[in-house]
Length: 329
Image (cartoon, rainbow, N blue to C red):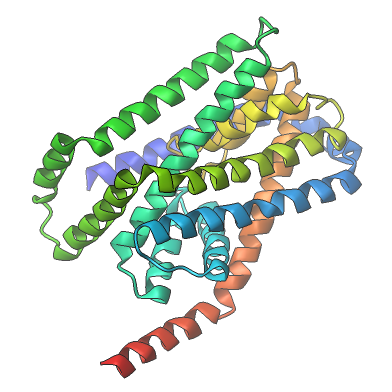
């Protein structure tokens, strides 16, 4: 009982501290003037471009699922991503939506839940690796600016080392043996079955590294969408004048920052924008407004996902799957 309490307390503490730093940079007394100065007509095209993120995300997930032998329709992948965005925005974990879309995909397709969650884990790892690569390339783009590279290179080095360590563990037979021994302590048969299915997905990815090229390409496209959208906001937010290549560092790092313990990523994500944009000479005020506009984008997708979730389509499709299984048996 103590461990969940400590975890929740840590999430609350991190969220409170980062939110306090964000609000301090925002200067609430000047918020009405800052928001009034935003050119909202330019925010709309940035949002429309940002809306494209779900397409390469769905294609990446489908590709990894196919690699593991699981069939997943494109429209279902898009729907599950939208529903997942709702739960990611409002569950205290910040990544609970990944579990939700994995479970919903399992119920829709009939594939094991552990396997579908394994495909999500694989796509998240690939996305992290691509994020680290973008940060490194962004550092190269700013190599002539002596003020920026130390921060960028340090961040890229930490990310790349972390990804290399994770990859080494995943492909290590000794690590998997130790992990399996540890999992035997858990008595739940369903948990063990799910863990085996997830392990099979990761093994399938490890055996076919060439087939992962498509997933890497879709991950790159998935990263480019918010980078382009973020740069477009420089035309909407006064004081945010920043070159395109800066967002090759800022946006991937913002994705990584939400891995810190927090309540739905709130505070961590927005404070990260103040920190990362500050490396490129952006004042705290415009960076905070940028964070608020990005948060508005997130909430709009979350509301769209909520609409999909409560519309009842998932319940009808789940019922059709059950009836199909009964007909087969």
